[in-house]
Length: 300
Image 1: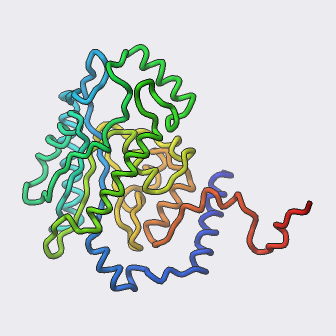
Image 2 (image 1 turned 180 degrees about the horizontal axis):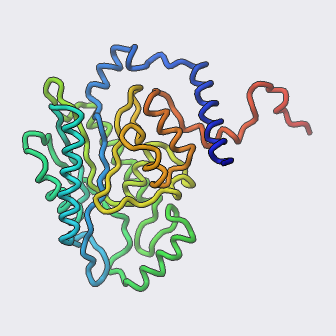
Image 3 (image 1 turned 180 degrees about the vertical axis):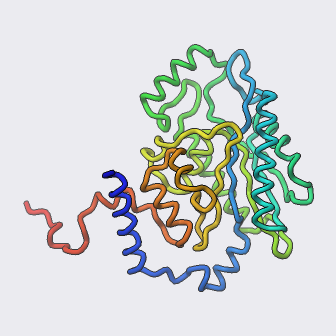
């Protein structure tokens, strides 16, 4: 109950600050920004690969999908196609896919739901690959290492001869910069009123890191997040204010089930309707209230 009350107070504080600092470049009042938003993707859809068959030495880049995984991918493709059909009659997709066999196979099965005329292109993107656990993994040793990781923290724990979550953060950040250049330079050719949707077929940790990087979540907030299930997807949709939010397509119970805290959910709801930065919420309580600066002075 105390956590919920804190989230409500943070939201009220945010709305007050926002009302005292109106945004002059709101897309609904700025023709230049509105024109730029015309080229923004309507959605960025993050899809985890289907269930895969583990090799004797543990999962690797060449591990194929299981039969169940292929079926999961086909269903995911149909669900995404239905989502796009309900939104617009002239939608298009562009896909980034991890080079792993399980992700490429997931895309191949998903692709059955999409006519070729709807596809702008596909790019294999190494920077959204799976976290590197090291070569020729021993199953028993991996179980022990994952137990240690759970105690140490998923973000900073580094697998021997492999990567930490922080390493994945760095390469996902680099990918985001490239993706934004693709958008800014209008490298996705559209006709008329076509609606652009980006689909990223990747892995559980990379998806959570992507969301962390995009929404500027802290390490503590990242550690709360649940791993997506096989072929589960997260939809980041452009809100009325020109910001992407998980709360446009997904409801609050779903966000809560994914591990988002009340503050994180409140932020997503604000992103769905306003255009401003919301990342101050987590550290706002570190500082003294601004109504009386004299009270904040420290005496020697």
